[in-house]
Length: 215
Ligand SMILES: Nc1nc2c(ncn2[C@@H]2O[C@H](COP(=O)(O)OP(=O)(O)OP(=O)(O)O)[C@@H](O)[C@H]2O)c(=O)[nH]1
Ligand SMILES: [Mg+2]
Image (cartoon, rainbow, N blue to C red; front, side, top):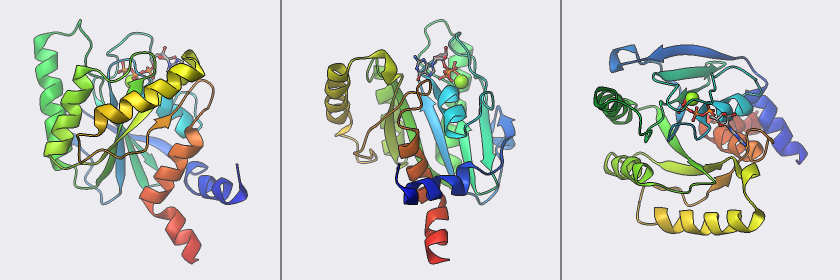
């Protein structure tokens, strides 16, 4: 990693990160004028693990082998300069209709009302690729004009060739969405791959790198 990126990284990610609040409905969403990015994706795709890796903490966000564990939106604050939000996973077959209804309502409220939301990261399990449920979310984000970027997770589980094909396939799958960011990031929370790239994105989003360059 070159020195400039290292310095940028330390600007936000060496600072205090804390669990700010958890929300089950719109009335509990924090109302602060701080940029926010969220991590969305199917159950068990690795959202909470990735947040822990980004923040270099082992157990900031609760991870689980059991799909569907995160039911609320968890907001994490990085020194009150950036919020990271961990969304409840979707697409898990063994979920009751009432839970799916509650999830859909919560997501619509979230995506339609978070004016401070700078980007949605949609996590895709590298072993599975883009699924219908991911397309449903991409479609919604496109309609409400919220930018999204795909992150491939668990790339430690697939071969280099499979990963190359997956990059190509994912690009093809997202090209119809105007809201899609054309760069896809490959990550492994377990092997710490791709985390620097996400730090770069987040530094840009939080404007911290701009401020430091001015100063
Ligand atoms: N091999 C591998 N496993 C991972 C990686 N990231 C997460 N996992 C595993 O995937 C499982 C689910 O991880 P979580 O981070 O809890 O996934 P989640 O998307 O937050 O799950 P829900 O909150 O239930 O939607 C856990 O057993 C993790 O250890 C990774 O980079 N590589
Ligand atoms: Mg989770």
